[in-house]
Image (cartoon, rainbow, N blue to C red; front, side, top):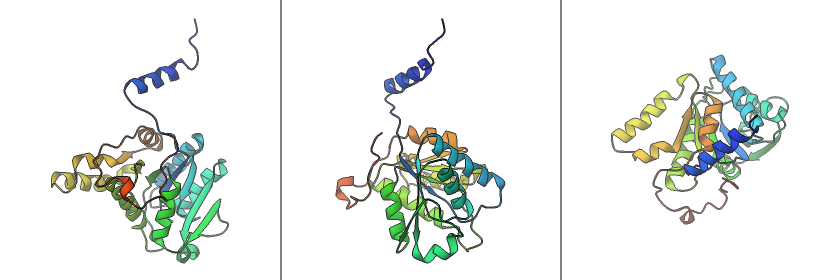
Length: 235
């Protein structure tokens, strides 16, 4: 007798329920990335694959608003795949990071602080791609955005997953630095698990869907003035 097509799915869901796991459903994910494509074709390939993963899951994109480099690549991919795209960009960067036609909706803000606040407000989760930006003397932007959103999780401002797409081991040394912080007593071991890392987009999305905070927060979310940082609507 042929087994019903959805039996495996039901079995998987039952196993998740029995183990206490509940998958997160994301409506919008913020992707931190740069206005350059980097020196390796694998960076662009991984960006395209991440875009396809978002499309397959019908997840909208929040990003830095640029139309060049990895920013342009993922925004075009997601937009052409039928999902919404919201780019958030400081007015001072319009000339450098937007070339030609804009993609989806672009929201102009006053400065970098407002950019990050708006990204956090609209996103249910965060993913950092590799960044290397020699054209505009950048390259630290993604790292700065990533570390701040990690710190916000540790502080208790949000409980949203933070993912690293660790293409070709790009973030290995950063992850090693986190381990060193634990070893030397500057980072709690549980806080190391704030960051979810994977070498490919499919595995990263799976890990983020299964993410459950393990770390002790510094202060309860209710004590922060962060009403603008909405939590995911459904987990």
